[in-house]
Length: 219
Image (tube, rainbow, N blue to C red; front, side, top):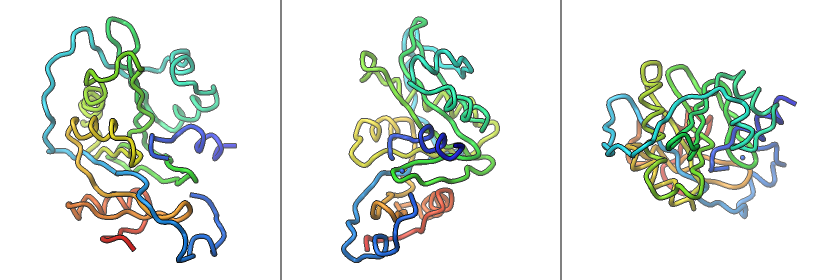
């Protein structure tokens, strides 16, 4: 049950690894394709400055009613995330919720099939970000990411986030918040790896975080 809750409740907008038969993972005919991008922000990285957005406030919340209402999570999902030490941040404009996102320590997951990994001390994994449709295109997403970094950087030095390859809106928002590409997650449905970006140190750290091999070219 615990694993089921993790798989259902902890995915970013890049999505899940499972125990596939060997002939599927090792087949030369298995389709290999880009899956998503792994981004990171480290202490000392610059953050672009945004002008104040009138009425915008961002804060951590433990309000389970709001989580159920806006995030479509079951009580079991919410309980599991909070017990793991995950935190949700809500962005509001004039007391209206406009966006939210989660920050994880401990156990986390992404992808389909699911890849489970452990977020080490002094790191945070950011996931499940949504800006509600009427409020998109106003720069709320990068402001939310920066607010989480500001709130948690006294105890965390590295922040990680993944988005699906096709999600160009997420890519723009993450880059605008000052994150750097650590690598590209690629491979087959059942076997994934990280292709290093320009920064070898960040690529290696990202592959280690996810427990995936690090490659430097497509294979």
